[in-house]
Length: 338
Ligand SMILES: [Mn+2]
Image 1 (spheres, helix red, strand yellow):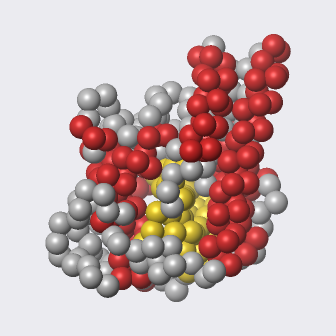
Image 2: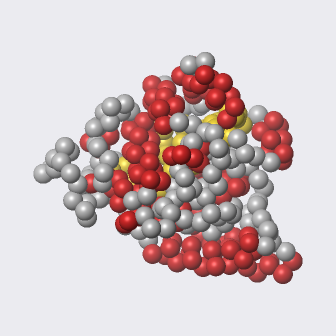
């Protein structure tokens, strides 16, 4: 292939400036520009495009994971159907969310939003199933945190007893939120209560949750949460690596990594929808991914969600959020392939 990994990327090149087509790429990325139930600050539906633009600036040699690009990474063209579903569902959901949640007269709108979210779930599941069938690594680039549910279910069907490694500020364990069953705030509840055969949910960086979610963490033996204050304690005792190694050792053989960018320090994702102070630093995330890669766990699928396309006025979508998102996506793929 006539491709120089040391050179700058052409403006119209693929994800990370790579030339791969779907046949030769081991990693297949599905952009899901969808945020029907965003409850606070919108903007993540533009993330697939913004991350694609920012990804062309990522250097392909990774000090921690070597040359992930050599396996081939390809992003599917954005499906206009998903964007149309996003527009319709957001138009219906936004006024309800603005009022603070669904009321009696909202049944029809809520039903339609739920139906669209379910269609997205099935679309993402079909994409994932096909890639797993072909022996590839499926990656979902959201969109809000509801977007990977279909991928989680498809991976768990293929790898029964799979675990989820979730990086997030929020537990996402609410049984529906603001009236919407498939809310971003319910994705892990839906994953655990749905058809997926999951043995474990390891949550890292949790620092904003309701009492009901806290009760769920205490009562479901499959859930293990590492809270923000525990991360901080480990950091100050130089114990991050030890904590990560011990926590990763509890995961089953097959792991799906679900990365909500708000798990990071908000300095790394200032425009994400629901930012929370505290969180993981860049070097800290790298240690977690190194420990995951060094273990004999196999990452069977992954997602990156809630990246913002940026504040108003960011030129050509290359916001700081998208720049961090592109680098994080590459490092996640590197860890999965290592
Ligand atoms: Mn989340």
